[in-house]
Image (cartoon, rainbow, N blue to C red):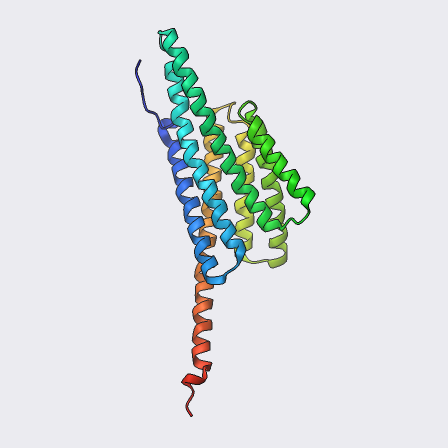
Length: 246
């Protein structure tokens, strides 16, 4: 039986996009951590963990592409006993990889939601956790359920960032709002991945653009916070009694 390695559909372009998403999310996590080290704002520390989870999720998504292709190849073999054995192994592996992917992705977005929305109502928190667990358990059988649940979580996130933009009216708040619009549209398009492979590619591209906007915004925020801190330190030095003439 031949074993061929594929990086997914479109001659590996989709897996290349997934890899770029991984790198982008890890960079967002790094920048969020740096902003936290400057400002000590707890939300940025939580953002760092959330995007680390999302980035790690897409590593498992790349593994899903490899597994799916391997699954397709062994279905064409003629040794039925061998097929049954290999399919059983690959189905277990695919189940573990997909469950890890979906768990980390939902965990990442749910962490963002709980951090940004500051949900204190225990019933709401339990409701979101129940939705997440239900989705993870049944999404292996009903993939659309995974996208619907993510859509709900991202929709709440989008609502928060819309109100945040209305209050602040800053370029950075607008960019974050636009980024989550693209992420929401990406997830909606993902519902139709089975109709045509092109929808899957559009889904991936929109997600990459959305995360890239978040990364660019975080870089600007970090540089701005860094300048503010340097300016504050310089003013402190100038005003310090140690440097005043007696």
